[in-house]
Image 1 (cartoon, rainbow, N blue to C red):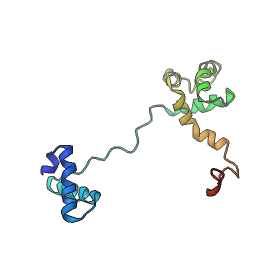
Image 2: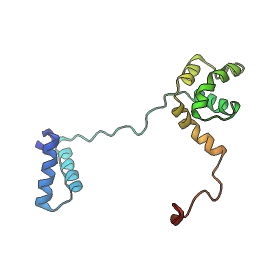
Image 3: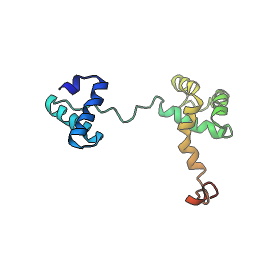
Image 4: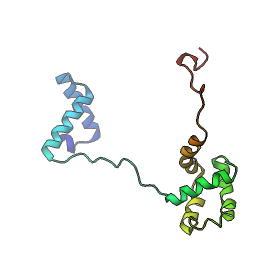
Length: 141
């Protein structure tokens, strides 16, 4: 129980002493001590969620994937600049143009746009043969 209440510095020293006494590795010592604490306290370690929910609606992503080809497939920074003009031309797509979607699209950073558009771009322009190099040919060796 002292291990659970101790400072981080002390918890680094105790497994070292345990390793010296038993011959275990540091990872094994920490794992076994944590397992014993879990048995005693009955508390399981908290596992963080795997992925955060998406900040943007699916309509925002769909609209962005439609705007990019219409704008001439610009890069992420240029798309962020051009997107307001393209939204004015898309007044006819009223099914996707809600105030919330427009606000999300205009507030999205260029890097986020590129991250969401990467699968669409990669599907549109697949890598052809000859892109990969053999291990020895990476730097001309």
